[in-house]
Image 1 (cartoon, helix red, strand yellow):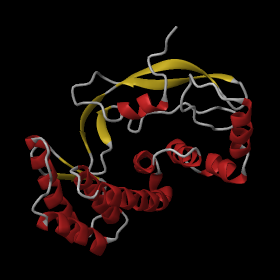
Image 2 (image 1 turned 180 degrees about the vertical axis):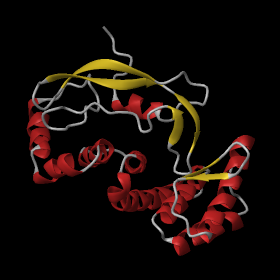
Image 3 (image 1 turned 135 degrees about the vertical axis):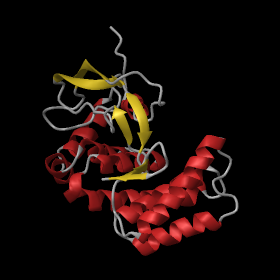
Image 4 (image 1 turned 60 degrees about the vertical axis):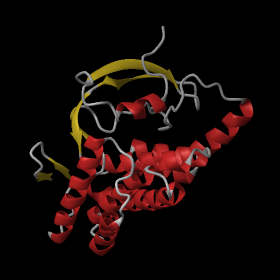
Length: 245
């Protein structure tokens, strides 16, 4: 029987569901851990309704954001692709990685998305995708982990912005850089980031009109939050007012 969700890539995509998506639904799914061969079941999100997003792009509504990940119960390994068959040589390296002190520390002390980012880095995944996963890790971080996760996500986003220079994609990344700087209390840096965007005649680039209007409103809201020295998790309400937590 074919599963409705086969890979972590599909799970990550659910976090970006359109606003018209169906109400949240969790589906029991079965996996086999590639590390030890143990079979396990877990409930994963197969659909959800998003009413909008915070400035860090975390969705809110009848949705889990970030979406739950399938993790091996015995060792914490995130099953990135449940259809992949590893060679004997690959399994030797993978098992050594999962048994390493670093990985055991991440399992004991960190969240699934943070652990996934480390797995992706180890396996040579795209730095741009890793930056996105690190950002998602901040959504599940909690107050104690948030400064560390956000600092790593910020560095990754700054590197991504350098690679995206000259493209319209860079404006979204620069907005996230400013958001992370503000959330970390680096108000002077955040101010400089958003001032530079405001002064950039090309901002926000070639976007859909609705997206462009929204990005300008967020920029103004961010500057308002910076003036208030706020590190709040914030978004815009339907009437344009700032909602913060």
